[in-house]
Image (cartoon, rainbow, N blue to C red; front, side):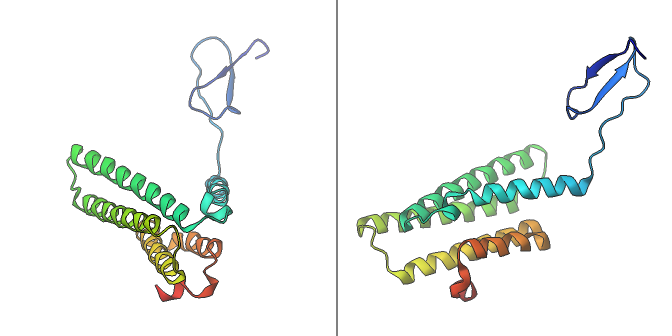
Length: 174
């Protein structure tokens, strides 16, 4: 094998290569990736992404918070619409996805109305309204995470509670 050629294989990790002679190889061995290492790497990337989020890392105003929530809720509603269309194309039942999309669009509308009301009032927001919005938002996120991830979402929920400073009891009033 002294005259072998190194050939990188497409769609295989870059550290995987085959040293072979000219002609068709007998076997190609891919790098073995441990599932727990992969899940740990994904968790680290997710935690880094969450930590850099503008609502977690800074001190945003109530209008900034509502604006960010409106944008993210609208993106989620658009993604749900895409999923519903794909499910219908594949002959599946998209009723549950469509109802989740309608709920998301209704919440986007409610948040837009609340944002416009706050702008008309000059951005002065009563603390009880901020707490109410926080409780509603956290309750919705918690419900969605538990529905989507089940018990695996508990770690995310506890980190979110800590990041948003829910030690003041606002979470418990939801």
